[in-house]
Image (cartoon, rainbow, N blue to C red):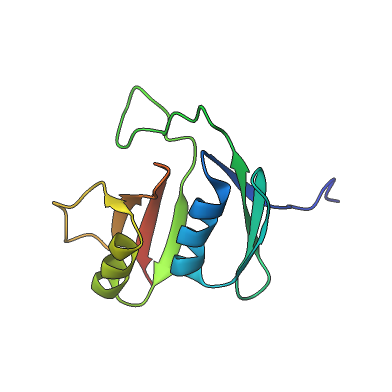
Length: 119
């Protein structure tokens, strides 16, 4: 028997509204919140939350000596189309040289790593 249910996955960031807007552009959905806490509800009802953390030090990727803390795997039909979209929204490529894999790694505008994965 489970002791709990999974609630929000929460990303620390300097500007919750801006980062929620980035992920709303990538995933769709609606954004609600204030300066300290913003929740993105994506199609299907899942949520992703963003909490103000003014002193955030973004994780490094790849960095064998540092933890990436966590990352999001986002499933896409076309890697090239999705890549153009996330770059227009402000993502930064972290592995631009490797185009042969079925995934590509980026940093969101607050520096969190995420992957676009071919489904």
